[in-house]
Amino acid sequence: MSAPALLRTLFNYQAWAHDELLDRMEAFDPAVHADARHAAIRLVNHCLVVNQIFAAHLVGRKHDFSADNTEHTPTLKDLRKAVTALDRWYLDYLETMTPELLAERVPFVFTDGDKGFMSREEMLAHVATHGGYHRGEVGRLMRQQSLPLPWDTFAVYLHQAEPSRRLQGTETAPTAQAA
Image 1 (cartoon, one colour):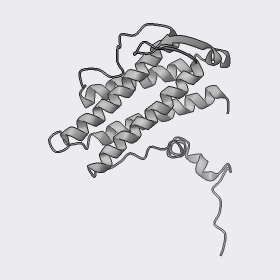
Image 2 (cartoon, rainbow, N blue to C red; image 1 turned 45 degrees about the horizontal axis):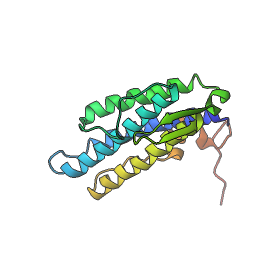
Image 3 (cartoon, helix red, strand yellow; image 1 turned 30 degrees about the vertical axis):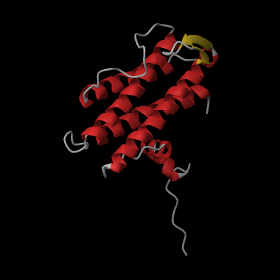
Image 4 (cartoon, rainbow, N blue to C red; image 1 turned 60 degrees about the horizontal axis):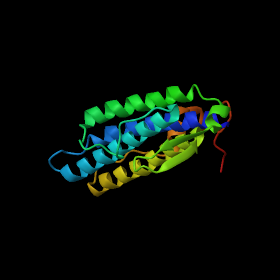
């Protein structure tokens, strides 16, 4: 699989994982799970902000963030809307990428003022892996509250997105062997 194809798959997975997580976050009761719910929303919002910052870096435009989270905590509904829109942006962006553009290194400045220099491919890999780390943190918060967890793994995504993978590369399902 080529790097552009792998990145498209990873970002489709990320959009799926975000959707699954945000669905499950609805189980946080605002009264009963107030602190955990707030922390979970802040974690997903942090990912949103970082993804917005890197989207700006990828296209060479300035962003208005001076930190890696916002002062205001969005509602879960507003967070879902923003995350879904940015996931779509990344998928559309990837459709414009060639191996040469992905390899191109881009200078940028982190929110703390430090300089950075990464290829577009490295930036995209950062966005994908960074999000997985923080979805795991939200999952830990959910587990602590005995809430149902999303099944957020790349393998699960691949097999849900392409059920034919369960056939292990054959055209028809394998037959059971007699014992």
